[in-house]
Each structure stands twice: as C-alpha cells, then as structure tokens.
Length: 248
Length: 248
Image (tube, rainbow over all chains, first blue to last red; front, side, top):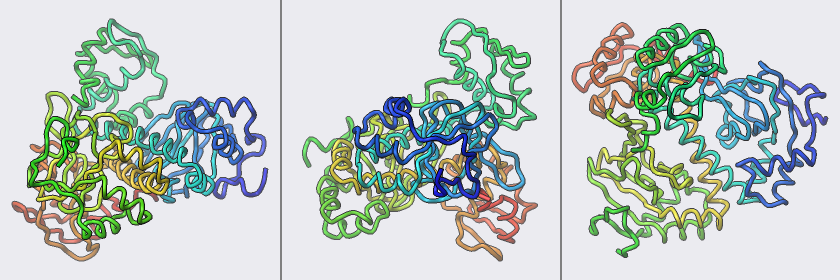
C-alpha cells in the first residue's frame, strides 16, 4: 500500500485494503452508479480505487473531516450521522449496498457534514476525490451517472424534510416500521434491525421519547415487545402515515 | 411563442414570456451555475431558454406535476413548499436570485416533490428538460456545473435535516432570525420579510405555535412586535443556537 493511500491522518490497516479483483470489477458494473459506464471508464475508476473492509462499529470518517474520498458501499450496512456542538448524534441515513456517499462533500471540496459508521461488516470502494474530479472531466458519462445518483439522494432528503415538518412522530415511526416489510396488506411480525438509539435518530425523536411514540401506535394496531413488533393491519397503518402520498 | 413552449396543461401568458436579450445573456454568465461555461455552451443554453415573468403569488408549478423545465431564478424571490395529503403546506426553501431549482426532479424525470410560488415579482429562466439532458451530454462543463449546484443544495438540505432533528424550535427560529442580518455582534432591529405562516414553515413549527416559540426567545434577548424583531445581543443568540457549529 503506497503512502498516498492514507485516510486523512488515519492510515488504513494494510490487511483490510486491497485492489479490485476481476470479480469486484464485474460486481461494480452492476451498481446503479456504474451500470451505464463504458468499459474504459469503469476500468479507470477501478484502477484508481481500493476496496476497504470495515468491521461493525468501525468509523469510516468523522464529521468535519476533509472529504478526500468518494465512498461506495459494496456490501454491508453503513449509517450516516450528524451532530451539533454539545448534543447527541442523529442518524440521517442508513445506507444499503450499492450506494455512493457522500458525493456532495467530495464534489464541493468541503468537510463532511456527517460521520459514517459501519453497522455490520462492510466492504467499501474508495475512490480518491482528486482522481474522481479529473475523471468527471474526462468521462461525461460518469458526470451524468453522478448527477443522477446525487439527484436521487436529494429527493430522499426532500421527502425527509417534508416528513419531519408535516408528519407527527408517530406517523414517522409508522413509516419506518412499514419500510421494514415489503408487504402492504394483512398483518406482519417484524424484528427491529437497529437499536433504539439508531431508530430514534432515524425517525427524528429523542431516544427517551421513543417508547412513548411506540405506545401511541398501539391504537393503530402496533404491538411491540423488545425487538419484535407486530402490525395487525398494514393497510390501516399505511393510511395513518399517508404512506406514498407525498406527491399527490 | 411556439406551441412547444407550454408549461404542462397551462400555457404561459404570451406577454410574460420572452427570449433572452444580450443583457440577459451577460447576466447569465454571472450566475454561479453558468459562470464557468464556454461561450458556445452558454449561448446554446440561452437560445433554448425563455424568460418568464411572474407576479407575486403566481404558482410556477405544482407538486406532483411533471418536471418539464429547469427553472433558474434571475430576479425576485420564490418559495418551495411541500404538502402531504390532508395537511397544510410547509415551506422547504426560500430561493434567492441565481439559484436553479428543482434540478433533481428534472434529472430524474420524476414529478416535482414541491410546488413553487413567487413571493415577489420574479424573472425566471426556463430551460426545457429534454434539451438540458442533451446539453449535459454535449457539454461536460455543464454537467460539472450542475453537479456542483446540486451538491450545494444537497448540503443545505443535510443541514436542515440535522437542525430539525437536533435543534429545538427556539434554536431553529433563532437561526432563521440570524439569517436576516449579516451582523454578528451588538444588537439588531429586523423587519420580518415573510408572513407568520411562511416563517413557521421555514422554521418547521406549526403556525399556531410560532408565537409561543417567539415568546421562548425572550429570555435569549429577542423582543418582537408585529413584523419587527429586536435582538439585544447577536453573539449571545448565535451561541444559543450553535450557529456555524454544524461541522465542528
């Protein structure tokens, strides 16, 4: 590993970093961000990138650090959290495989507004920001792919701002619970995949009030005990939180 | 005006639409979005665009409509608001001159997540979405400019989500008040430029609770009467709302 492949002051543990295998490369071409790129562009990006493996609870970067790397989650789960002085952190987003983050900081050359932490063993592609900026000039197709990716994330955030301003905490918790199942009618038994602090941040309530918000959903047919939640009528809960009604 | 220049089902009033004058063109080259474009690219965008003039309270487009046009505010003030079924609207953003909106809907070809309304007499550049998408392929410099613009808006929204989740309503109102003056020490007398409903939406509280939030700022040295607000100590108020502390 060259001295140039350092993550701010923190260098990666050598064993956790590797170049891309042919298998990684074919995996990349299936990611939404890279699926429409020419072979030449894809290979260039791959050559410039490294794969880093993180363990659960590893911090990928901290809020306020310089955005030297574009991160793309290949496998695993990563949370993005923000904080302000003297206050607790809040989870802004929980990323799934295939998502690039945090594109905006890398493009503006400004510090990260959020920190990133692995919620599970994760495999992340890191592309140096300086190389990305050159590649965007050389390959307009990459710039278009990045535009489309950023536009999607932007719309997710607009929906989140609207939910925070227009919906109650119970409605937001209901939306979060609905996001855990693909089913849309009948009943469902769910296992909460995140701890209470993470869920509170995601929903936008203080951790100490989450139980009260869960309790308020009882009258909408939601019963919870520890990490298990039963929804007696998915249609009724969807109506309660206006699910999918954002753009009507 | 050709039949092709229609805004969804609604066609513009002919008198309010015009092509770009040489003066408009030189104005465009000073906008952040267009400041680094070659003459050829700028002229092409200008040729494809129209200037539309809106009166105060005119609706530019509604939530849920197809995003057929990239809008760029040349002069005036425009609010972006969102709503969910059976609920009031909330103001997500108030745009100033030079800002492009809503880039993300145009790029993804999805419906607008917000509606736009003129808060004052406004002059808006409209570029057809289909032509923009072609121009992005032809002019990588335009794609880079759009990426940078979208990245900036994305960061604004991240900050808004963090403020909504981590700050109290009084802190958010204090931040809004601070945004109305460039001064950062001593005292200030401000005239509120928006009505209470708009301010409530911007701050993320219900209109009926705004007075209570104003009242709670009294102990931080904020006195208000009708549209006039006096801040007795700007430094103290900045400390109260952790202004500028987002990325520390």
